[in-house]
Length: 255
Image (cartoon, rainbow, N blue to C red; front, top):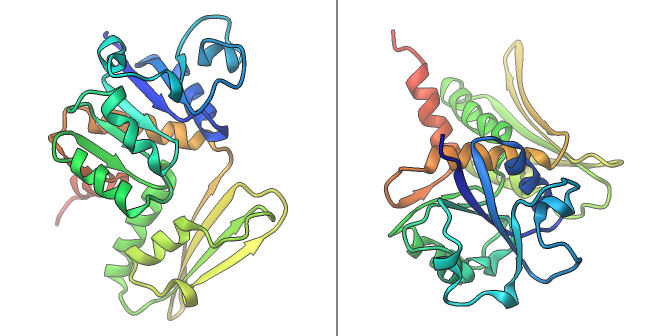
């Protein structure tokens, strides 16, 4: 079976874990990784990650030129860099190559550019690309429709050094049409990677939906799911939430 060739943009703490997940998955071939600068003496991502074979050739942004995309074709791009990473797309991939991006926050001009790319290629944009959190958001919306008068509170727990309110919690508040200032409760203790809980209060019962990230490798597993889901799709903007919602709809019988 022909492997899906992946190009990865971003090789920071999370990017390394994402690269590792693609290397381990037999359905994919990590063709190359573009990072800001060459910070070590390795030529391949696999060597940085401790493998004894070559996979995922490393390039710095300074090495990119107009020939790069022709000489290094891929079937999909996965972006874990930063907001302005979208400006590199024209140099590293063809116009119709699918894109999976998990950037937390885009600057308005960069988001406009991403939307213009979606006119020619399928683009899946999910700031939190983990499977669990997107299943949680879809399930929460279903419960809200079933019990529209329930009291709803969001609890987000993270490591002590995280000062800002979780962007994922704000996203959950948004899809449930809740005021994030009054419905998000933040807890900062120890080294928690990330935990989100949605509490529905009903007369005589309580429903709780929760998701906890054990490792940032979950982002890599989400990116793998997203890549498989978006390949072959027509141009447009997609989200993990939309794809999972359709899977819910297709698998819930109507009586």
